[in-house]
Length: 318
Image (cartoon, rainbow, N blue to C red):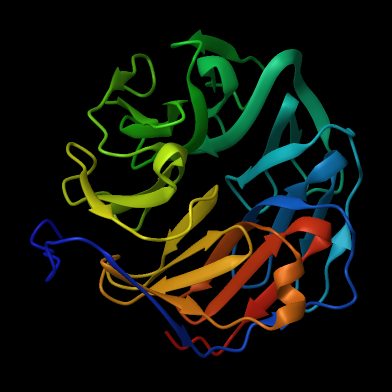
């Protein structure tokens, strides 16, 4: 996979020409609270977490969504499952866990000063959560105990990814225009700051241990940027964009095909991120902000957002 080469080596091109696809609104909605994070275990089973402690799930591929026990009224910003029954949600001052597929949730960590934005596990025992003020929480016993690591208190950490049990990344920002990626090669014992050619990073996504992308933005110059790696995150290269600046999320399904959500806009690429096309959405969908995008396969996607928004597309055409 390291021989994967992008055919365009200059600036990224954004075109405003609309690409047609059929994103559909899910109705009825299980909740009117915003969904900030999504996780699918398989083609049928998925979970959403969000505003005011909301958790909803599906067991039939999204045909129906049902609410689960509300353990907290704190915002839940990230959800992750390590198996079909074991999962966690991290949020504002809290981490909660289920060991029965979400039938019951119990609190594992409740600390007011922790504003956690992302959680990631490599198995049922070992995982990390991270968020504001440079805080990284690590567990090796399924969350029964969490060790809080301090990096730089000015860091805002927003996205975690581990390629294996020793190599991982935490992405975020330090100032309005200074993006950061922290890398570990020893299972999170130590974190090293990488040289990152980007503004604040809001999302990081790998499709193989070697190939990954991150989405960032620089508010002072009103532009967003995509950076990519072909060597497992040892080095990152920047692709300049003209996409509207906004906090967003990036998700690739193949080495060429990927998506960005930003505000209430959707963009797609078929060349590894060098050119992006604005995707057509009906006017009524543009009334909501988009917070999470997820694909179980290249042809079935989901977007989740404000006011309980759930939209899906099973006939994608970039």
